[in-house]
Structures are given as C-alpha cells and as structure tokens.
Image (cartoon, one colour):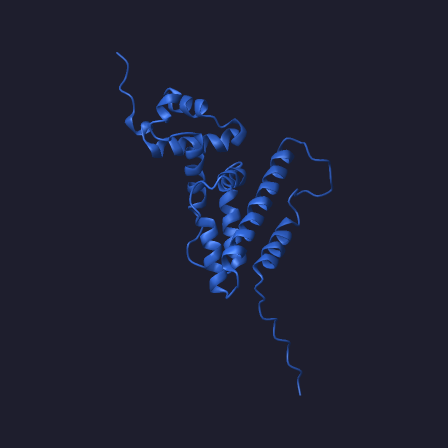
Length: 194
C-alpha cells in the first residue's frame, strides 16, 4: 500500500512556492512544468488543475516576486530600488517579471508603486513616467542579473574590477532620476560669516 499523498503539495500555493524554489535553483530557461511536477512528485497534468498554462503560473510567480515592493509611497529612487531588490530576490527574477509584464500578465504592483511615488513628489505625466521608469528598472535589473550569472560561470573577460556590477548603482539612480523628471531643490549654500 502506498503512502497517502500530501494534500498540501497539490494546492495552488504549494505549486507556486515549489516553482519559485526551482527558479532559484535552475533559472528561468530550465523552469518547466515537467520539472515542477517532478519536484512535487506528481504528473505534469496535475499542475493544470491549479494553473491553466505555464504563462499563468509565471504571472503568479511574477506577482509573488513583486509583492515585496513597499506599498507606501517613498521617493521615486527608493521605490525603484525596492523594485530592483525584489527582482534580485530570485535567480532570473528580473527576466521573469519582464516577460510577464511584456505579455500584460499579472498585476501592476510595481508600476502602481512608482506612480504613487511620482505623485507624492509632484511629477507630471505620472502614468507615462511610471511606465518608462519600470521599463528602465526591468531592463537594468535584467542586465545586472545576466552579468552576475555570466560572472559566476567565468564567462566575462578578466578585469581588475572585483565587482562586475561596479558603478551600476550610480547609473541606475541617474536613469531613474532622469526619467522621473522631478527636480529636487538644490542644497542651500552655506552662509558667509559676517
């Protein structure tokens, strides 16, 4: 007599959690329904009880990745950094969120957070600017993750730089600030003593 199957592994949440763990282990290119099912010790067809197709599952994963983005509006750069940090939580997280965003799947939590931050800072054209910043964040994070992945496999040319992402934080902040179009007040110059 075989042991009774664990019912928890057959719900939507456990499938998504297993898929995220596998994403971190093998990356997006090797994340397949067959592999996820094998990790859960079920047939691949069992996954389709919970997700109509792989794109729906990937949209759920993207939503889980972006769920950690702070919902309270802060300044635009801090919000963009929060999105980037969420994307870096999982291997190929940026690529996964980018692909679901391109297909208009999943939630728009990241863009909503950017729009709220822009509004709080008095920016114009909030919807267009939040979309532009999100595109930049997704592209930048994908570039950084690919460099880090290539470096971990020794695929980057040898340099004196220890950090393959050196200087990219400065570029990131500069890009977000430029796209935000919000000019902060210049620092007050020190007063001359009389």
